Length: 179
Image 1 (cartoon, helix red, strand yellow):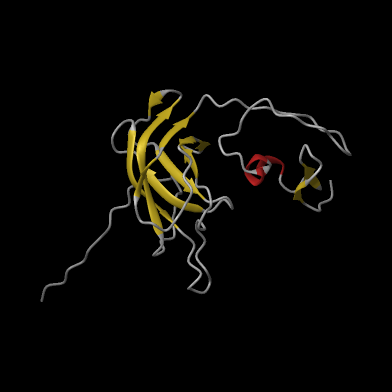
Image 2 (cartoon, helix red, strand yellow):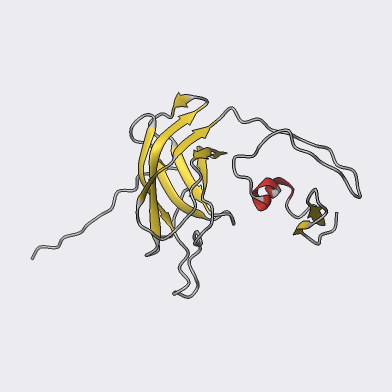
């Protein structure tokens, strides 16, 4: 009697804590990856996230300076409970070793199963901190975020504000919290 067992090798280093729930819906990304202007080294972990913070893809760099065919999984609502993922038309957010990376071009997810060249650049990130008083504050940013989406820009102060208005006075975001 012969028994055959097929094992899939996990390509993430121990302790990287990058787990992805696979779904039948996906697209793929590949490209160059740099950290601080230098080619990313072997073992660098690339993580892809949806705008809700769910991990939708992981890849460990095997060749310095590049990554290849990172599958980015879409949401699957056909199962119960639904498997979180990227939704059609949403932007994919990339992290390199935990730091948010700039992707060129931005990747808007579609269930096309096609490879897309997306170059990633992490490091040399400029931050801005603005002290706030209770009540209304007028704020202007001197830095451009890698992903110009309101939920991502406000992520570090999530649940610590009531509402955000745009320059024309229009409501952008509302959170009802105790400050």
